[in-house]
Image (cartoon, rainbow, N blue to C red; front, side, top):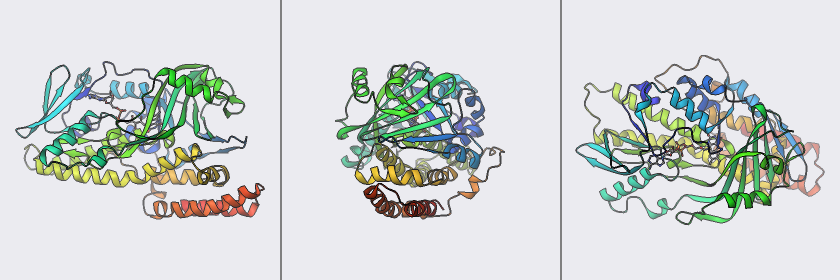
Length: 461
Ligand SMILES: Cc1cc2nc3c(=O)[nH]c(=O)nc-3n(C[C@H](O)[C@H](O)[C@H](O)COP(=O)(O)OP(=O)(O)OC[C@H]3O[C@@H](n4cnc5c(N)ncnc54)[C@H](O)[C@@H]3O)c2cc1C
């Protein structure tokens, strides 16, 4: 869509044979991702499938519960609701709104890439070969194109991509996810995070009693490729059985959701930001370059930003050319290098936050358990403020008009403060101190709570 609107020719090669395969996955669209979809004219088509989120509940293993209005606060600030959409419906809308669907070629698994006469060729598994000025690998966490970027880099200069980078993706959590039908006791639009030791649940009740859910499960150790665990449906059943009596919210147990599952799956939750994004005329983006836990709902939103920023840069490059000559290798190097640097800069804090949140939700250590239980519930709008900062500095398509809704959040939380990343550790450490005091006494002094709330507000300024 981004290339189409920028007037750049493209073809999409997709290994699957169908667009809307049902795998039980769903995607939270945050305002920065929603703004891009809105610019491309698709956000409203998506809303027919969704129930906007307005409240967030947190439940703890000791029975304590807490509710905040973060989703509604974000909606009010940015003028665009947070929506959870089935992945297949997102793909359906993306596909159906393409002006020329024949440009998406299904059943084309990319196997190799090569440079030839100032062009790049792509060979797919049926033997067909495609040629273009550049190739963008958006082929997910197990990217074939990333392997090819490494091979092409090493062919230019041996050892360019170090083994350390090739093995830098780690796996400490797995996720069982699914969609259930007819679960009572949960309210549409009110998301639930159920925190527990070694696991956490995220539950998004949608329309007509449908519930989208995720169980994040801590593994016995930290894995790296090629030693990553592999999962079968039986493994999902075995893990689910361990946590079947866990309380989700309002008397609903995981059993009530699991027993009513329509569809479910299991996957590793890989984590990493790779450093080598390109070689020659080939560039990678999306999950192939940055993979994060889904607890903050950022992966796909960041992938959309990647697409938007690349389209912006390509469009600027083409606008600046006096002739219709093809982009030279040197020009592409400069463009790809700037693109990957800008993206890594933007992604660092988002990635760090997703690492913290998945561990905090699963009570990874005493510090995080104290933070989760005694700090988080007393922080008011702090989670919404942190999210607002990353949303407000989101990428948009600079060659298309911005949506016309007026919402103050885009300006109010625009990147003019360096407080966030620099002070996060400090604030968490101070919060830990207060957490320990609260935990030791269990009887939480109102002054401690006031100080925690003030600290929280300070971080989010
Ligand atoms: C459980 C879970 C929940 C998540 N929830 C959220 C959320 O709420 N919000 C959010 O923003 N993100 C979420 N994410 C992350 C999100 O799903 C990913 O970040 C996003 O899908 C990445 O998009 P992508 O296009 O880079 O890769 P993918 O979505 O993985 O797409 C890659 C595509 O490339 C195709 N492909 C692969 N290899 C080849 C090949 N050799 N040749 C041709 N085609 C190929 C695949 O078939 C696929 O269609 C979640 C992830 C998980 C695991």
